[in-house]
View 1 (cartoon, rainbow, N blue to C red):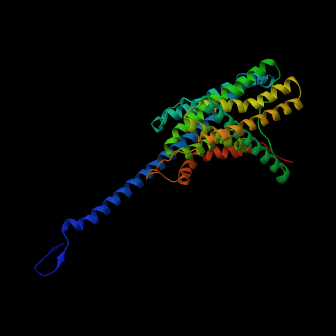
View 2 (cartoon, rainbow, N blue to C red):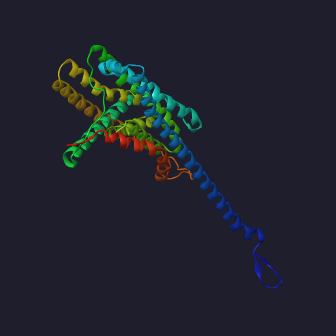
Length: 348
């Protein structure tokens, strides 16, 4: 401060300006943060709309191809041959209806990717086996949770929730095609579509959000509420494993092994009887539960579950806000899910 002839002290002009400059800088920072949050919300809304479009196209293309089947006169062949059904499922559902829309999504939003489209980071063999065991234990847990919901709905609420399916094989050839169409192709195509394309697009908005959001999409893709519950649980595990390992291969293996349990049951039932098939399925479940417990202990003791400490970006919206931004794009697929579910609900 300086002294003037009137006997008053006054502050230096530069000193007076300091609080104002600091306030201005703070206001500018807050404005930049708000602009960043608004931009992120716009990007998530856009991603949600495109994801919803992928789901709509997934169902629409299947419907059109089924109609083309009738138009071309292959309807009788389809209903009389399991091998034809399984083969058509590969072409209509996975290679066309699923892969094309989601690959287009990845191409349109390629700037969103913050990691390789097809993650293949090198993994230790022990870690790979452990993550597979962990994934299978999650699949079994999701299976039991779904069974509980079905039982509760039937015994308490008086409604039976059924699942759609193609039925078991009726020949050796159909057994082989069943393995290809239910174990191999879905494990590759669904993981590329969901855990490469969709997860890659959403990962920039936060790993936790991406895992949760992609699992919702995976659930909606399965077409009814019963399968949504199971697919959502499995989707959480597969997306989490992909994020933690930065490798898509373990998720593909888990996906194939999980689908393989039902395929083995159906093939054994075709070759022997339902009782033996159910016994084998239960044994497989118990084996994977034991392997899963060992895997979880290993991953826990080696600190593989440990979360990396990441400082949250100031312009990052909250988890709940990001979900709200995603919701409009998934509204129509959700309505379609409810509509399709109504076809599988019967009064007991």
